Length: 100
DNA sequence: AAGCTGACTCGCT
DNA sequence: GAGCGAGCCAGCT
Image 1 (cartoon, rainbow, N blue to C red):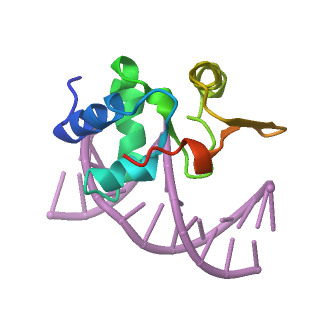
Image 2: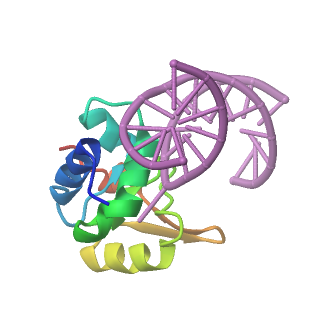
């Protein structure tokens, strides 16, 4: 399947997130003038293979569902502040969120 | 055209 | 903080 126009916009933006910074699904949607964070997740799930998808996290700081381990390793390698707890690894959004 | 689904969020308990 | 319900909207039957 080919990426939809919306998905391509998502990929464009995600590809621009600098190493060491993150955005939430909601942030990505907002910057695209949309209120569909779920569609952002869907786009990354299907077409995120070529972009740093691990730099997109939930508003809670939780990593991409199903890829927590891999995302944590990649983020740690980039120097992103991580908080490890019983629930898993979470990003410190206060310090790592990309202002743009 | 109508309905369902989902890598989401937010408010309330 | 965890669980739940409702709103959201792009994409695919």
